Image (cartoon, rainbow, N blue to C red; front, side, top):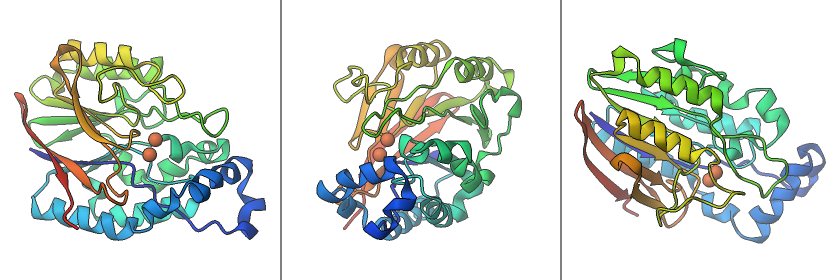
Length: 281
Ligand SMILES: [Fe+2]
Ligand SMILES: [Fe+2]
């Protein structure tokens, strides 16, 4: 089976100053980073880049698409609409999880903007393993693969804090799924937004990292999962975790200058090959 793993697309709405009063303080605070630090410019061609990524997926006859979060910049409804429309033709062959930017405000999380935008893609094959909303979401891909989506995205206490937590409930569901006999003859890929490890192989900083990464890695190693796919760190890299589990950071697939993805080949025995691909400019 062939997986294309992309991440951190960061569709962004136009937020002129006259709109700020209606955005709420968190999103206004974020404008500093987006405008003054030039982040906005990095994602101006997101629609075009995502179209190219999906053309690649067609050309390479990819079986399943993995999108590991941060679809939006500020969790605005029109950002979700744009992301959902852009990925639409893959929605029945896609595992997608939210990133911290998709839970930017308490209202965005409460109103389940992510879940509503990607409703079709969040329908699991084994719904009994869900513990927190749609997660863990287990999908059976062909006869040889299972892909499990986890949500690590939590509303931060303030902008600038971007830590993640899968949480005890989802980890319990994950353990149950990994013991499910229907997965026993399949390679398993986990998808989570926050990085379990940095490119150095060390844990990320507390304000940016995945708080329960050691627990997740322990469960993954014990079950012999084939790979963990994540985003969040805008850098494309691979590290090997405990139990020799391969961990793939897709970086930002749409960020100017680093457009690209991971292409993974698997069969029921596990990971066969992995290639980090830069989109031709
Ligand atoms: Fe991101
Ligand atoms: Fe992120």
